[in-house]
Length: 438
Ligand SMILES: CC(=O)N[C@H]1[C@@H](OP(=O)(O)OP(=O)(O)OC[C@H]2O[C@@H](n3ccc(=O)[nH]c3=O)[C@H](O)[C@@H]2O)O[C@H](CO)[C@@H](O)[C@@H]1O
Ligand SMILES: C=C(OP(=O)(O)O)C(=O)O
Image (cartoon, rainbow, N blue to C red):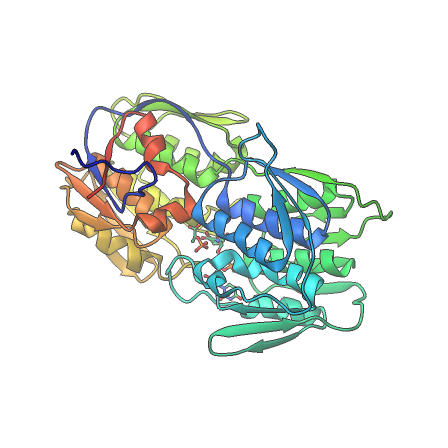
């Protein structure tokens, strides 16, 4: 009898072979990093929220299970793939055991909702990508500014809600942490109080959350210096409709893959301004790119005589999101010039990414633990590599498409944490990527 592979088998390894330049059109999924705070905000509002364009990535699926275990209810409207409705169900007297919250960084977004439902949040230290020391001290300072009590233990941390209703809260962040900014905003939602955050994070993920709250009746004013929030004037509790924006990082990865193979194509379903910076870097490197309100198009490049790539991650308003950097680094391996990269936000990123690119033969000079330089174009050779974090996985896919010979990519669980099916999207553009099912 021929061996058959059940349709549900999830491959653990992929083979990637170089081929024709990628071409065609593909749409991105909703963004994991925008979806996680929106889910946490939906829980914090304790209203019925319909959320659309929800990606099927593993981290988002896990967040949904954590919310259900906490006592929130979920339903999936028929005929609307990617949509769900979240509302508060019955909450038990004791806080739930959320041990597997340790698998994702974004589980910290649950703290405000847990304070609302149980008065206390006890969570394992967050996991996610192993990209260096990923502190939470600033998140804790946020809760303390609201009068909450924070206890750090070996394996867990506990936040206990203040018994007093906080008055207006003002806090200034020492740096523009996205996690701490979102924590402050969601805590104010639970407290129903006014909030001013100085030196806030203004990434699209944060401003998407602010826009959703504004639609929900909150008074929101966001500028480079401060974010100011005021609770809704009336106590309307009607249902809300929010939308997860298309994944800017997935769009950047697909644009880099098109460019890396000398191809041309269109990536849809995103917000143009979210990909402005990586698009500018491609254009400066001599790869013609146009960005419209909801798409990015990579045009055929002639001779590559553009400027070298200089991709420095930054938390400044309009700074380059750190998660774009690995894909740009993979692309630059094929571009002429001496290219410079930096990510001091995630100080362990290069320690993860560079050894894997080196397995393909990449020669990258580490100027410091967080900065590196490479001269291109380089000749890469297929090898066995591992997606040691989400963005390392996507950078390896791009590099493998440029390499001579076959690359085998393992560690797909990491890749799936951030993208429901990035290999499938690359296949839509013509990439030769095959799951290994033995
Ligand atoms: C789930 C999610 O959206 N993850 C993103 C988020 O990471 P992350 O969730 O880590 O964002 P944070 O703002 O919490 O932290 C960013 C970095 O700042 C430092 N830090 C942060 C808080 C703190 O209290 N103490 C401290 O030292 C750590 O080095 C940490 O790694 O923003 C990063 C930078 O844009 C992105 O690369 C991640 O993809
Ligand atoms: C670093 C990332 O994820 P997380 O913060 O969830 O680990 C990422 O999305 O690239």
